Length: 128
Image (cartoon, rainbow, N blue to C red; front, top):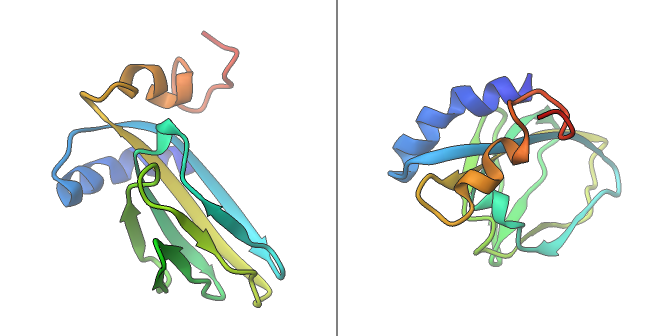
């Protein structure tokens, strides 16, 4: 389902960023009390990313020290490889997020990272 969303959101991501993008992968997670996301920058398959707040209790994300609190259904678009980002320990009970990742279509990682190296979306990495 999230890989379908990865493709459906692609035109929106291209419009909002003004960039031609290739989809790399999606990741969905339900967080629970005490979970945190340590400060980091993403791997090359996350040049342009979005986090979409699916529901539950809100949980702020920090980008280079700027706190961003999303409403259900909001998406935050950011450069995951360039901007250090994190989340403090979660005080709520449950929070659902989906992360959608893309590369610049003419960038150095586009072909290598397309579909996260898989032949097609939805397939395991070992199938060619």
